[in-house]
Image 1 (cartoon, rainbow, N blue to C red):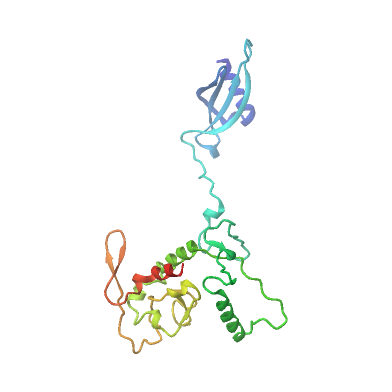
Image 2 (image 1 turned 135 degrees about the vertical axis):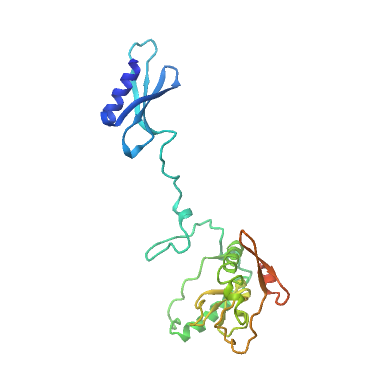
Length: 274
C-alpha cells in the first residue's frame, strides 16, 4: 500500500491531481522493481496510463521512485506508424517548388556509362535522338547558338526495370487499349496522322498524341489506343476491335481476339531491345 501511495503522489506531481485516476494494475519489472499503473483522465489521452516505476535497494527499508511516464494502454487511440515521405508520395503530389530527388540506388535508373558501347554511343543510339531533338529545337527557336557551351548530358537513363514498369503503367492506364474510348474508336493510334513517335525501345509500343481536339492531346498513348479524333475517321471502318472485355464480379480481363496482333507483342518488342 505504501508503494501505491508513493507512486500516486509521483503521478500527481507530474500530471496534476485532476488527470490521475484509479490504480489499475501493477507489473514486476525486475527484482525489487515494480511499475504501478493509473488511469489517465486527460481527455486527449483516452485509454492511456500513468506508469510509475518504484524500487527498493537491497537491505533498504524505504521505497523510492525510479521514473514516471505516460504509456498507451490496450484500448488507447494511437497514431498510425510513421511512413517515410518517399513511400507516402503519390503520382501528382509534386507541386510548384517541390523537390523529389531520385535515390542514388533507384532501380529505375542506370548510369549512362553502363549502357555505352566501345564507341561511346548508347545501345539505342542516343546520339541519333539528340540530333533529332536539335532539329526540332531549331523549328521552335530553342536551338543552341554557335559558340555556346554544349548543354549538360544526362548521367543516368532508364534501366530495364524502369522501362518495363513504365510500359506496364502506361499500357494499363486510360491511355492504353483497354478502355471504352478505344473500343469505340474508328481506328488505332498506329494509323493516326496525329501520332508522334517516341525514340528508344518505348517508341515501338507508344507515341504522343498531337491532336489538340483529342482527349489524349500531349499524352503518351499506346499504338493500339484510339479515340474519335482519329485523323482518318471519315474513311476508316467503324471499330478496330482488337480486344474485348470479359465481365465478372471483380473486374474485367482483357481477352485477345483475332485481327491485330499488336496487343500480343507489346512487351515482346521491348524485350528485343534489352
